[in-house]
Image 1 (cartoon, rainbow, N blue to C red):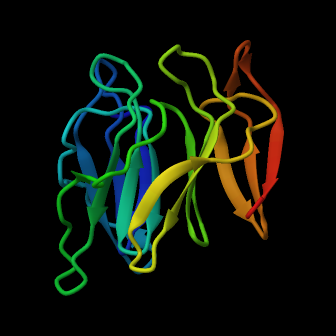
Image 2 (cartoon, rainbow, N blue to C red):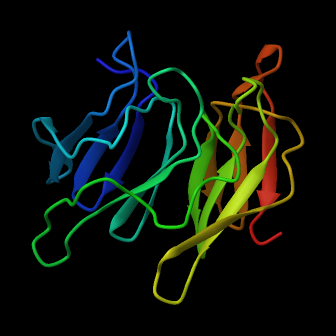
Length: 193
C-alpha cells in the first residue's frame, strides 16, 4: 500500500514512485507493463536514490522526472531525478540526479506538468510547511536536456497537493490545500506568460 506516491506513464509502463507505506517515505518504484489497454502485474523497478513521498512527476519523451518531495525525515527537498528508457532495448535505466538542476527551493506536494518546451512546477509546501504560490519553469535545450528552473508569475492562491491539467493554451490548477485546509479554487494560467 502507498499514499502520496507519484504516478506516471513512461512509454508502455505505468510507474508508482516513492510515497509512504503508512510509516515512512519509501525508495520503491513499482512498474506494470501496459498491453492492449490494460496493465500487467506489478513488479519492483529501479529504486530511488533516497526515500521520497509527496514528490511530483512529469514525463518528457523517454524520461520521467521526479521533482522534490519529502525525505525520510519529512523534510521537503529540492532534488530533480530522472529515469530514462533505453530506446534500443526498452529497458529502464536507474533514477539519477539531473546534473546541474534542482528546484529553486525545497518543495513537497507541488503540482508538475509537461508543457511544449519543458516542464512547470506550481505550489507545494516549502521548508516552513506552508503552501506556496511559487511557479517555476524549466525549459528544454536544443538536445532535449532539462535546463534550470526559473520563476514565473505566482499563483493567486498559495496551495499544495493540487491537481494540474492542460487544456488548450491554459494550465489549470484545481483545489489543493491552503493555509486553512482544503480549497475549492480553480486557478488558470496562459502557457507562455
